[in-house]
Length: 110
Image (cartoon, rainbow, N blue to C red; front, side):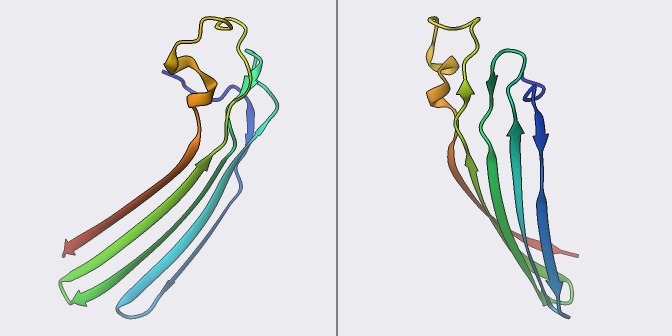
C-alpha cells in the first residue's frame, strides 16, 4: 500500500455550482502537480481531473441526478534504483497512468 507520493504536491482546483427551484448543476476542475522527486528518485505523474453534474427534482419527493468525470494521470518520471532490472509487470512504470472516464446516475426519494 502506498500512503502518498513522497513529493510536495500543488493541488489547485476550481468549483462552480448553480441552482434554480427544480434544477441544480455544477462543475469542477482539479490538478495535482508533483514538485520534484521523492527520496527513491522518482515522481508519480501529474493528475488533471474535471467533472460535471446535474440534478432535476422531478417530483416534490424525488430527484434524478447524473455525474461525469474525466481524469488524466501522467506517467512516472525517474526510477527507483532498488527495483531497477527486476521489473515485474505490476512494477513497470509504463503500466502507470492513462485516461479514465466515469459516468453515474441516481434516483433519490426523499
